[in-house]
Amino acid sequence: MMGRSSALSDSVALNFGVSLISSILTQLTLEALYLLHWIPLFQILETRGLEVRLVNAHLVKTVPGRKSDVLDCQWLQKLHSYGLLSGSFRPEDQVCVLRSYIRQRERLTQSASVHIQRRQKALTEMNLQLHRVVSDLTGVTGMAIIRAIVSGERDRERLAALKDPRAKRSTQEIAAALEGDYRAEHLFVLMQELHLYDVYQQQIEQCDRQIEQCLSEFESQNHQPLPPRPKGKKPSRHAPKFDLRSHLYRISGVDFTQIDGLEALTVQTILSEVGLDPTRFPTVKHFTSWLGICPGSRISGGKVLSAKTRPVVNRAANAFRIAAQSLTHSRTALGAFYRRLRHRAGAPKAITATAHKLARIFYRLWRTGEDYVDLGVDAYEQQYQQRVLKNLKQRAKQMGFDLVPETSPS
Image (cartoon, rainbow, N blue to C red; front, side, top):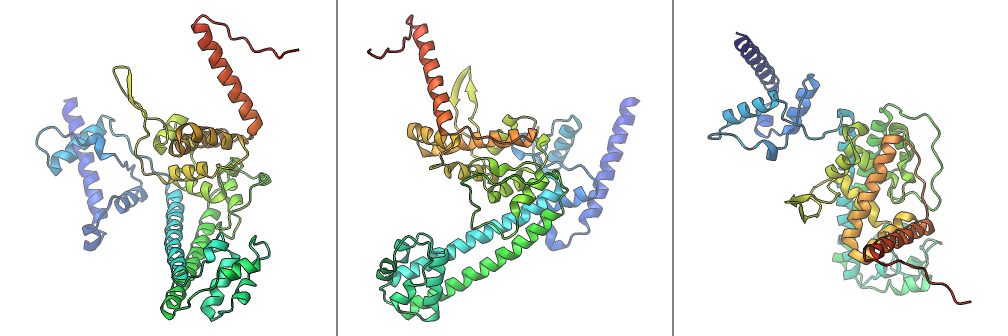
C-alpha cells in the first residue's frame, strides 16, 4: 500500500512538473521552439523557482533496452530519483549576465584584430614598412601616421614627425620606412579597415559601460581600501577606462592582481567564468580538474597509462595559460619556475604547468582571502637547489653511499 501511494505521489508530481513546463513552453513562439537550445529553457525554469540541472550527456547516455525519447526521459527521471544525476557547473544568474557582456567584449576585440591585420597587409602592399620601425600599429605613433596617410599626407618627414616622444626609433628611421607606392586601391582598403577598426572600438567602449553598470550592481564583499598596485605592474592599455581593479576587489574581496601574470582583464575573465562562490569547488583539485589543466589520471592495474591533460574548452583555463606565458621575462618566483620548466620540457608543457600553479594560488586566495607574497627569484632558486640536494642524498643513501660536500682547498 505504501508503495502504491509513493508511486501515485511520484506520478502526480511528475504530471505537475510536465504541466508546468508545458505552460512555460507555450509562452515561447514557434520560431523559438524550432531553434530551442538548453540556455533559454534553463533560464526560464530557473526564474520560475525550479531547481534545474544541466547534466553531461556522456554520463547518462546508457539507456537500457531500445532507445527512444520517452524511454530516455524515463531513464533520466529514474536516475534523478536515485540521486545519481550531478549537474554541471553554472554560476549564479547575476554572474551569467556579466559573463555575457565580457564574452561579447572578447568577440569584439577579436573582430577588431582582424581589421588590424588587414590594415597592415594594405600598408605592406604599398611598400610602407611601418611595422618594422613601430612595434605596435595600434599605438600612439602607428595610429597617428596611419590616420595622416588616410587624410592625404604623403610627405615622409611630416609623417615621421608624428611619432610619440617615447618611440625608440628616430625620425630618420621612420621616414625611411615610409617610402612607398600609394596606389588608390590600397589606400581605399586602408581607409575602410581603419573605419571598421574605429567602429569596433566604439562598440567596445559601449560594452565597457554595460560591464561597469553590471559590476556596480554586485554586492560588496570587502569595504577595505584597495591595496597599492604591485611594483613593476602597469595597467594594460587595452583595459577599460573605468577602474576595473577596484570593482573586482570590491565584489570578490581579494586583490587577485597581486599574483604575478594576472591583470585586471584576466581576473575579470576568470571570475566571470567561475563565479564568486569558491564553495562550488570543494577542493583545489576539483577546481583545477574543472579547468582541465591538471595532470590526467588514466591508470590501469596500478600503471599510469597517460598523464596528459583532458581536452577541455574553458575560457578561464585559457586566461590562466595566457597569464603563464606572460611570465617569460618576469623576475619573480613564478617566472623562474616557468623558465626552468620551459628549458627542461618545452614551452607547451611549461605553460600548462605554470597555469596549473597559478590556478592553485588563485584558489587558495579565493578561499582564504589572504594576500599573495612573491618569494622572488633568489628564494626560489635556493629552494630548488635544496630540493635537488635532498633528492641526491636520498638516492645516494639507497645505493649505500654518503653524499659529502666538497671542501675548498686551503
